[in-house]
Length: 239
Image 1 (spheres, rainbow, N blue to C red):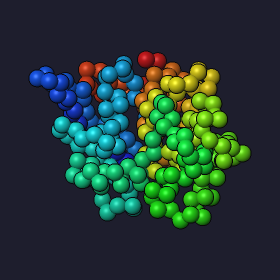
Image 2: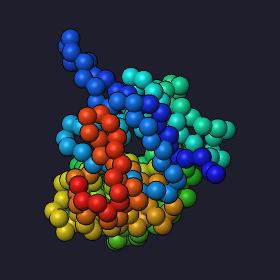
Image 3: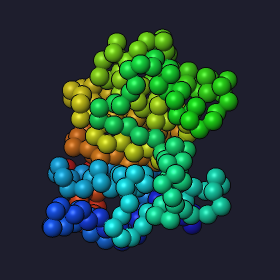
Image 4: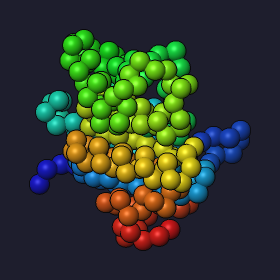
């Protein structure tokens, strides 16, 4: 049996607030297989975004570890806690694509330049990067807007650019943090369907933090965080 893509082993995160400590995650265990669409639910402040930050290596656990199995790109599994900060940055740059609630596009760059950015950071050849960016623009329905700047786009269009940017460098894992939280219901549904379709077509793994009811029927697995513990619920079950 193939190893999972991501394995969380007794992952615990405690924040110190003055003289008090606040435990956000308590000995969380989880395996995510390549190609899965996993949804993480929970009230605000429950630790959902913290978990994404730990999986991406932005933050470090108090105890436990995040293990990633990159496959042929690396000689073996990677424990993020054993990497230096620079190594974790390079890991994120190469292996992870991010989709945020507020898009996080650079307003001084054109739409295509925003999509080219992760390719340039990863050292892609210019011609290959150019073709990849144009292909992704076409897949998100913005092929005719390559030279526009982001302030000329609607919220839904900006999120489509963000999805293209997250996928263009062919990462192992897409992390989406409330990707429809800044959109109306209908636009959010369209964006979710696009993100689901493109990640599945590319055979990528998607981990999404969301409050959206629309995503429940799309996900392969659904988890919620309660009192620091990760609980799995049947797919398709309403929260």
